[in-house]
Length: 264
Image (cartoon, rainbow, N blue to C red; front, side, top):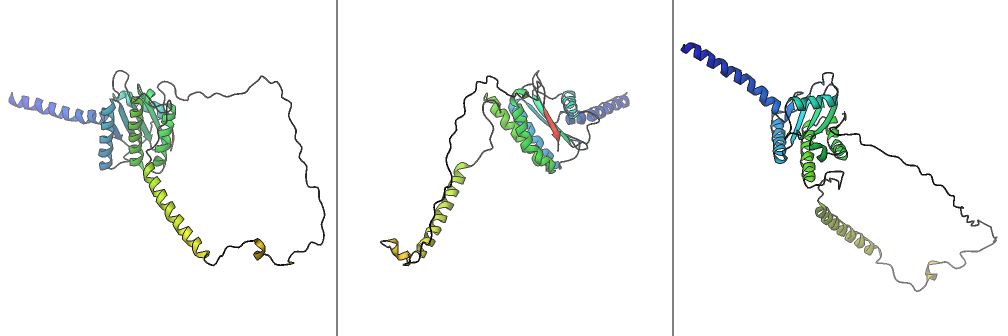
């Protein structure tokens, strides 16, 4: 009886141990199936994603894959996000960033509140700042930049000012620092220039007229002639009555639940 109890207990322990890692991996906000990151980079990036996600109650997820397995990048992103239970609240608030190495494709897909915080312009801005690093194989910096931008865009949306609607996000610029540096450099260059000019003017004396700089009888006019060069003509157009006007419109490429993707 005791032996049977130990066998059952041992079996339960093995079952729990085998299930727990799978659950932990599926719930991780960083899944590097393509092996693009070192252990240190993975840990640092996962901590960054967890901190942002808990701060805003909004899942920020990054997944790398060897291949999309025949799916489109958009379908892969949606399926992975939904199947692995990501998202806060009933609206599954969050965003997932997929990178597939064989197809060299990427896709960003917001969910729930993500469609408010990440507008079309916002996703384009993230693309401009992140994808060049993917192309250069600087994966750690690309993913870290994505997480940082998500943090800033979420903070801006939380204030009721989503990127692209009321104002645009701009990278912080140390204005006063560079202003002081420019002033110092300008003053130094000005002093050097003035000192150089002053040293060249030591032999110059003021003159009362321009006669000093001319030679007597140095110019003699032997022939003169008048030429007609041009005339000015002004014309005024008669206004025409034209009531037709041309124009163009551009719709959003991202509807509700849409995202943005491409190749790198």
